[in-house]
Amino acid sequence: MFRDISIGQYFPGESSVHRMDPRMKLILTFSYVVMLFIAFSGPSLLVGALFVIIAYRVAGIPVRLILRGIKPIIPIVIITGILNMFFVEGKAIFSFWVFSVSAEGVRMAVLMALRILCLIAGTALMTYTTSPIALTDGIELLFAPLGRLGAPVHEIAMMMTITLRFIPTLIEETDKIMSAQKARGGDLESGNFLQRVRALIPILIPLFVSAFRRAEELALAMECRCYHGGEGRTRMRILKFSSADVYSALFMAGCVAAVVALNRLGAALWAL
Amino acid sequence: MAIIRTENLTHIYSKGTVFAETAVENVSIEIEKGEFVGVIGHTGSGKSTLIQHLNGLLAPTSGRVLIDGEDIWANKKDIRRFRFKVGLVFQYPEYQLFEETVYRDISFGPKNMNLSPAEIDSRVLEAAALVGLGGDILEKSPFELSGGQKRRAAIAGVVAMRPEVLILDEPTAGLDPRGRELILGEIRRIHEKTGTTILLVSHSMEDIARYAGRVLVMNKARVFCYDTVDAVFSRAEELEGMGLSVPQITRVCRELAGMGYDLDPNTYTVEAAKARLLTLLGKGEG
Ligand SMILES: Nc1ncnc2c1ncn2[C@@H]1O[C@H](COP(=O)(O)OP(=O)(O)O)[C@@H](O)[C@H]1O
Ligand SMILES: [Mg+2]
Image 1 (cartoon, each protein chain N blue to C red):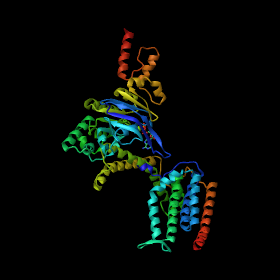
Image 2: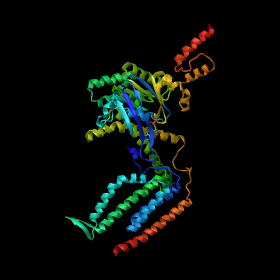
Image 3: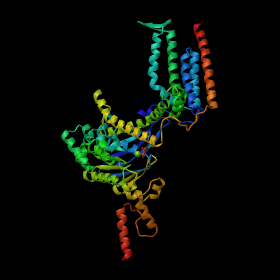
Image 4: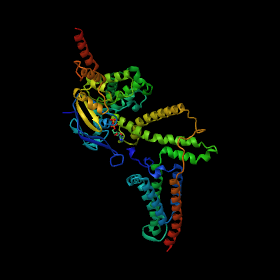
């Protein structure tokens, strides 16, 4: 049941998006989010949508996967759209009782929905194409300057790496324990709220026990390999910017410029 | 009538995604009441997936599972009934222990069956005795036990439901030879004393040869063969080609037979080989 969640999962591949430097992917993802929020005209948001579609094509991530990732947030998109439709003031094109829908509202609703979809698809692309290890490497290096100010950047990155590494393991374990208790007649599906909460105990306790056991084993294994924190630690994989990184940064810059230009154009057209 | 029957059972994990994986394909088998069936196959051949269908933990992608002639998925609400009828002990079952005491953990299954307290008590004590767990251990926390004891406590947790069929998924994995012997001995005792139908999934050909009446060999999600121990192990070459091995003693007997000694190449247990060798030696001396 938990296995079908695809957002936040990594899908190994060999595309140039996969091979990009994780630092660049983080920077570009951040830029992309900023770009979506400064894009307020239809044409400029279309540039945003185009960008993410091209990126997905280059990365070779199947459309089905994107749709599956987006499905759970459709209700949010619809609700946001409806709220926008009713609450944005402007020339009413349709009204009943105290509600009225303005042309401006419809436009905002469509733009907002498009913006949210792009936002999810864009950020998901980063996790789809970047292994958790590379991602935390990127985060650690990007935030390394904060380390000089005394922030435990390495430790936080290590904790993130370990957490990400163990999420699938724990999900698998939860599945197994649930099956084992169901085999003994454990009933998770019926009963009132209190009964359902009680039914979780036979699952949570073994899960905690095994998480602690794993943590202990991992700590021991790390100590056996002389892990002593980030100080003086060298890297197995040195991150390097490649030409793909440069081109994609240029592409992003071009898109941002287009967004800014189209914002003006869009505003001018709308005003007509 | 067969107690368990599958008809063209197929299971595909993550169907319709890029990760789709056919773990069980077109399996039609019958298990008779009171049988002791061994299930072997290399890792990933679909053994665990297959057995999780037999008590309704997994639903078939296509095909049917019948218990006592009833389709277990005919009425979804009714599925728990079959879980009590067909007890399933998972691989590494000790990870399912959760209660404060071993006694209470074993009683989890019977309690879910809504039995009377007296009935629960007698079943817990009976199951604990069957797996060789004595008095004071029952009052200990399951987390204080040794690995082998934990495993036995977990098995008792399923046995206490008095299932008509008991399925065990590699119950000896990760135990030392003594622990393995103990557990296998207990499984045989349960089989003999209670007449429970047993399905034993194992990697060890020795264990299967010693305990099982019939053997189900899985290969790449399909049934490779399902027959008596003799018939299965007489296809030794094919089994070895699949990455499975016949018992060591069988290999020794084959070699000896090949060298011209009067020995049945289809000998699966040390006892049988010993008896045969002794008569041969007696002949040689006499
Ligand atoms: N929960 C699951 N989700 C997806 N694939 C699975 C799952 N469990 C098993 N598989 C796959 O199904 C196949 C059969 O696995 P399994 O039934 O566990 O075989 P065995 O018990 O013989 O080792 C394997 O290829 C395995 O990777
Ligand atoms: Mg298995």
